[in-house]
Amino acid sequence: MMSVAELLEMQKQHTKKTPTPAEILLFYSTIRTGRVQTVLECGTYFGLSAIWAATALEENKAEGKVYTFDGLERDFLFEGMDIEDRIVFIHGPFEERVGEIITLNPPHPWLVFIDGAWRYDANKGYFDAVAPYLEIGDYVMWHDTGTTTRGRGLHSKEQGAMSFRAVNGVGLYQHGISKPQ
Image (cartoon, rainbow, N blue to C red; front, side):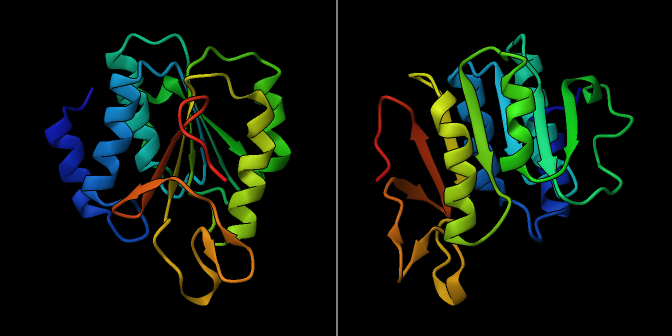
């Protein structure tokens, strides 16, 4: 298993279209300190955040896995790594396929990481697909929350904005504790 320092070095090499080191450390820390058991990730890209999540689950000796969804299949960075058995890639739209995982009754608390689109309507759809299954103490984290131009991000002139604390372009919500609007 890679150390945090090794993971940060890998993160720095792949920061284009992925969370920044500060954002990924918030993600990793939330899994570790929140004792997250299952991660549902919307938007795999090359699988870097899945590696961080699987590492945190392994360090926590969690029961669950990382279920990562993407519409595109490609070579993933986690292939061949010792934490690969903690990561399950699901090809297809998150909002259409997440129900298959929910029927498996993965252990809570969950962290749902939404990083699949930069549009308000898409992000709202991803959240709505999983919201009925959240339990008190589960987490939802959005990436790209700070982008407001060209209809990107969670802020939309026409549709308002989902309200939560956002730092460095990442929004974090804990079900039953904080309240998105």
